Length: 249
Image 1 (cartoon, rainbow, N blue to C red):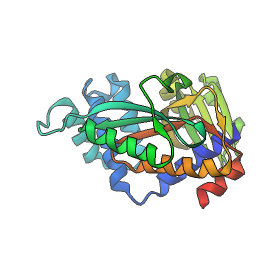
Image 2 (image 1 turned 90 degrees about the horizontal axis):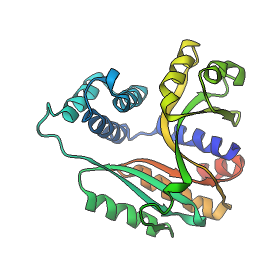
Image 3 (image 1 turned 60 degrees about the horizontal axis):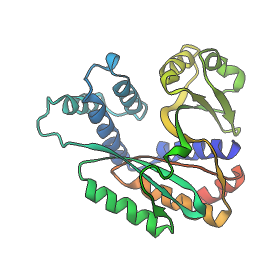
Image 4 (image 1 turned 120 degrees about the vertical axis):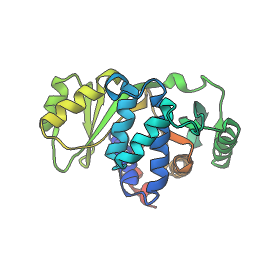
């Protein structure tokens, strides 16, 4: 699990230091718009509540959030019709990769994703080819230099499934329905949260060597940089020091 925790730390750092904040806001806006189709009331729409919270965590202006909700509820008649697509494939080293996208042009996004897989030496698979390897969970990240596992007891008491860490970041795993309640419990205990989101976590992992890991990280970064891609999940594992070295190269 140390390798996975390190990857969680690296992903968070990249998001936190990403100069392309406008691109991040575009993705967050799409997520809010799609979630708002089920209703614009945050209290009565858990998916919307989560999307709005992620936007707030990224310091998205309130006006942007309200406009995104308006688009989703139909108040903005010029809103594009986005759809959710999940792509499945294999990356370098035989690693299973699951890609979540929101797009207003299925053909464009499919072509872009297929190209990135092929360019990396991987391959895009059929629906169901790797989805069975993953399960939906909540993930909360907390600064490991400020807190230790004892500080996270409120999360355990609220029903968290697991707490792991790499010395730099602590990762709390929750059931999908428990994410909001556990976040609230931590905030009530004055624990500052770095990020909280739903993710597809692998039920088994593939150990990869340095050469394959470098190619895999390039694929994941390229997918993350695509405007239509909301999230990328992969079932790889590697020693924390190797992940740090490859990420810094």
